[in-house]
Image (cartoon, rainbow, N blue to C red; front, top):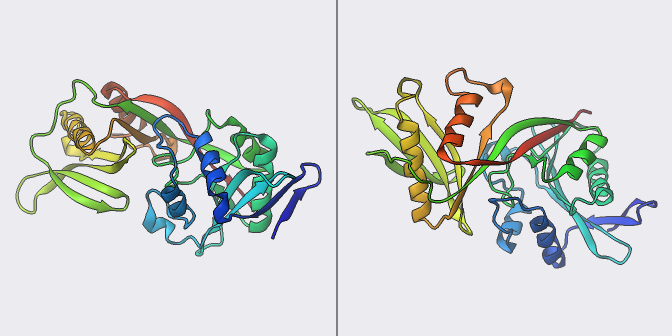
Length: 295
């Protein structure tokens, strides 16, 4: 079924169909930023199920997503939006939204999704999609039109993350002398652990890396226990994690650094984390925003 998005725009919305795949992949890839692999048919198929890149346990509370496209009068696909409802509290989520940064298309997509979601709080760009690994929000500088359309629709934005990138190898990083590795399922990848002391051995530091996609690796997180900070352990563990990514085929790596002032840890907070990655040789690509529209 096709629904009119408004007589002034001449655009109409309908559910995604299998034949839309090439046009939707082109829309997603038109919004790519540095360090993001090109979206594939396999990635799109996974995204259509609502599966996120990480936080899969948290996202298990989401109901099945709806994915709709917007068409021009000639039937060409101009944009796509995917959205879902959280079972526990009925809140809506705009999972991903692409329209080549054309404001009229983005507005039509968003207003269509809001019309279907109805009178409920709605969140947008709260976590990374499989179509955009490590993008824990909207890259606000690269997608200014999307941010403005969200704000015009009543959403309030929160600047929460730094999105960083580095080409591999990074020179000058030491490696930790002894670490353990184990598979991770959420997110999928490999966990590195540094332990010491008497049995059961104390966990002193850990890192989690994602398996590279098209030469791009993701560092999901790295953490050092408070008693072991400021001794070079974090830098050495980072070196080991990046070396494993290179061995798995990565030529570049990305990481999203939590930069929310409300979550600041006085020992390993925003300033220390940002300085850590800056000194290692990472460069900021964009700031990642999440959005909320109250009932």
